[in-house]
Amino acid sequence: MEASYLFAGDAAKSLKRLEIGRIQKTVRVMTMSMHEERIKAHKANIDRYCRLLATHLTELEREYLHNRIMEEHAVLARLEAEFQSASAPPKASPATVIAARSLSSDFDGHSHQ
Image (cartoon, rainbow, N blue to C red):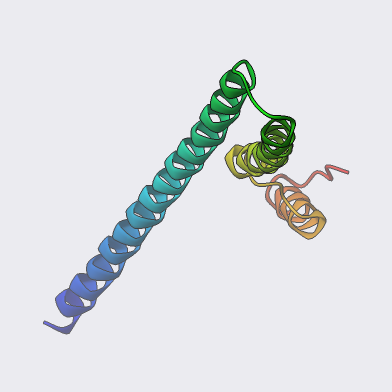
């Protein structure tokens, strides 16, 4: 009786880990999607400001639009850099690489250095 209870507990823990993994993946996908939407919005703002520059404007209005375009480009560059780093696979730390090599040599008897 106790052994089956332990197995049920282990299964519940495994299911909980799976569910947490799915939730984390969903959050990552939603975050990336929101990030993409923000990038699209800033690009749309830049396009709109550029179209406005083609109209009849005072010098003050023109200066304002040029400043807004520069600000939008700065934010866009930052968001695109964040998006690139967020979508890149995580890099292993030097300690992780050393540990993996150590484990690898333990299993096959050869050193991989």
